[in-house]
Length: 60
Image 1 (cartoon, rainbow, N blue to C red):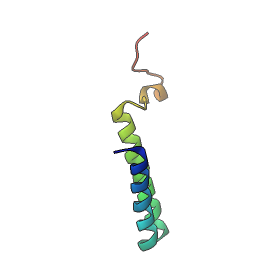
Image 2: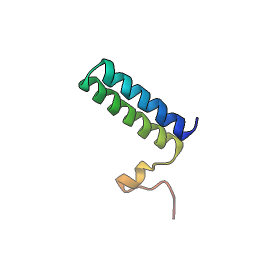
Image 3: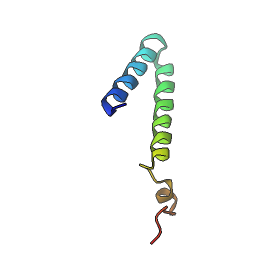
Image 4: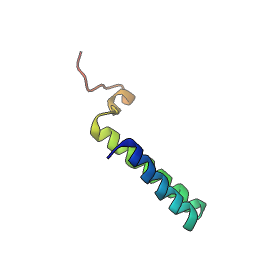
């Protein structure tokens, strides 16, 4: 799935939560969406958590 399609899907879900749930539910969906994105980026290898802790996955 392309980045544009993923962004559209995320926008639709957030819009749905805002329209029918209220602000609290909107924030809940946004936070879980951000966590899902972070986890997916780590699994894909696009974010290296070792760099944040001082331990890198690449050896020198």
